[in-house]
Amino acid sequence: LQPMRGPLAPAFLAKLDETCQRLRAVWQTDNRLTLPLSGTGSAGMEAAFVNTVGPGDVVVVAVNGLFGERMVDVAGRCGAEVVRVDTPWGQAIDPEQVLAAHPHPKLIAAVHAETSTGVRNDIAPLGAGKGDALLLADCVTSLGGIPVATDDWGVDLAYGGTQKCLGVAPGLAPFTMNDRATERRIPKPQSWYLA
Ligand SMILES: *Cc1c(COP(=O)(O)O)cnc(C)c1O
Image 1: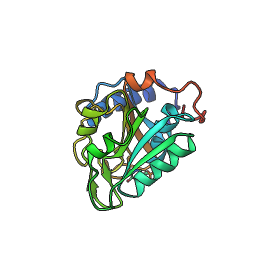
Image 2: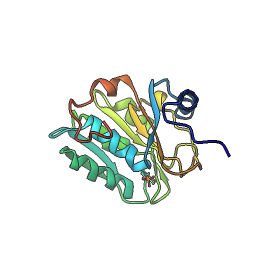
Image 3: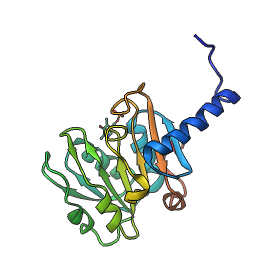
Image 4: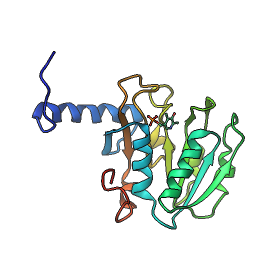
């Protein structure tokens, strides 16, 4: 056993830097803002939405399972005008349909691997067709299990969770956000803690 290290101890900070660097490899990204949030995957979801979505913002959410439903809920609590695109549970989303749902949304959100049904959704076509919108991907179940090519796919912000495919201790949400998304952060997110 080793003694506890304080959160500002140089050894802890060095370990945190190393962890963030290794997370960039997992996410396949160069995003400077890549870190493990203290909280479960849901904290990642919350952080992603509260930082980018405010009252009246149009958010398109692809829904083909429980976690798409949850994103609709979270976006709604941020005051978003939510445009949901439903696909029957058990089927993959149709990216064209998602892209056609609104001419100029602020954000498009989709779940990469819908845990509730085991369906993988294609994220790359959403990135290719997103236009001016931000693209948010829930990768809680996919990260560490199947490739997640954040930068290549045009994903602007994404979150994962440690206790699913990564198979490490629960309670951390790997999070990544590019400059494009950071520049469009809303001025005063409703959450102080996750802002
Ligand atoms: C489990 C899960 C979440 C929520 O993560 P928690 O760690 O349970 O808070 C979000 N999205 C997906 C796709 C999940 O499988």
